[in-house]
Image 1: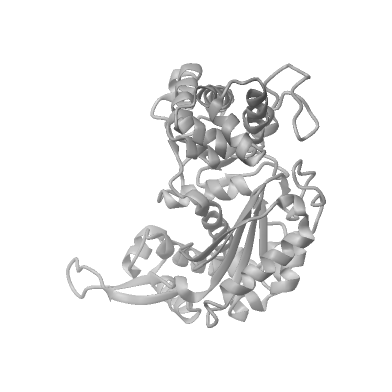
Image 2 (image 1 turned 45 degrees about the vertical axis):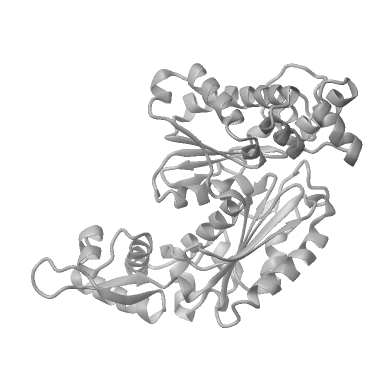
Length: 422
């Protein structure tokens, strides 16, 4: 983003702090802003007026009085702009248009294989984006975000050798979308967006959390002191390809052997389910296979929920393997919470019960003390909500506001200036 002289640092730091505190609810009046930020009354007044002129803040109802005239409350104007946020999975995609507070205004869920490649996917996204934007023709688009089911070099927004995404390696998705929409675009791993969405939805900006997505594949997003921890290149959290079994016969889709995903991912459960059908170990799965010619991970999950013995055993075995690795991460990172999402939630409590037992029995007592282990409450919307928070928090940062506020809207700036080195 734009480099700033020292005087500009003070100006935009104050403007950013004022807007972000009102947006988060940390301060709702001018006196509260002064108390929370330690900024002077004159600076607060000037920055609030500037934020109102930019359409980011607005005066609301009168607040409670502590003696004297009651102060006017301030409100973040989430209607000022729109964000298009999408998350691609292995076999489906979710697309939403949100306001600047990550409230989902319209949402579409489509069956779509990421293996169709980036160009066909862009065509589908273009059509859905156009449809969603047509529902809000009078509100400007501020940003686009994309979550991908594979490693992403965050600084460039390019997928990096994603195992289940043929044709995507190094593809300039950010550049293509910025050229089409003329707004800044952020591309990240889907688990990171799910983690950020969960952290913000929980009302906390400083919790230490690991979000674990267990679906067709397995991945994790790490929240450290309220921020996504991506590591030096963006690869942090790629636990699906951690080797958990010294057995060269179990091949993963990444080309290696013994990966967690190859033993506990949804595609691995479906693979093993077909073997179980051929060996006559599940009447439930045999009937499904006879009717449809295939077994999906969701079939195994539904079988477990309905009490099929083989499905219950398979889910429990997968949960123990995931829990064993998570116990190591709990000891290493000591998060306040482990949150699970993805298709695994369709099996009910069976998966989480085994995970929790495994984590607590194999973690250090201190690391597991007060540890919360739960399922996500956001469902298919977690990633798109997290995507909006990623974009809006960047746009409302001091550097972000220094870049776009002189022109009035992010869409008036060269998009590359807003996301360069993000």
